[in-house]
Amino acid sequence: MMNRHFIFALCTVLGFSVSGISMAQSVPTDKEAAAKAAKAAKVKFRWGKSLKSAQKQAEETGLPIVLLFTGTSWCGFCVKLEKEILSKKDFKQGMDGVAIGVKFEFGSSDFSKSKEAKTYNITGVPAMVVVDADGKELGRTGYVPGRTPAQYVEFFKKYAPKTAEGK
Image (cartoon, rainbow, N blue to C red):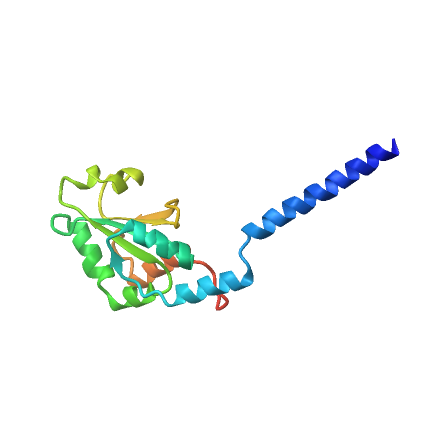
């Protein structure tokens, strides 16, 4: 009877030890988190065209990705979003170190055929979808009349990693 209790106790201790080791390996260290935060702080916001490239950068920095689905050659609200928000200095500078941008520009009939539009269930433009490095949707927005560039930046900051400065 004593041997059974000893063996059970030994297996329990070993089980917790092994699970603790695997948990420790999957949790980023303070150094790794600090390195990601330092990389994230240096990211200047711009609209890229490659989701794959953005995902790699998001993995390295921990920043979310903002996917912009737009059609400025034919969509009035897309033009308004570009003119009133996206082209403004307050928006561009405010987004530095907050997110990585990817812009998908479409003609009037081809956005619904896009792989990315199908993946994120885009039924109209403009649409802005926030995703993580794995492509998991975190949030979305679009053109909101009266919303300021600063309000858009604040919306996207909700998805940015928290830093020592409390960003």
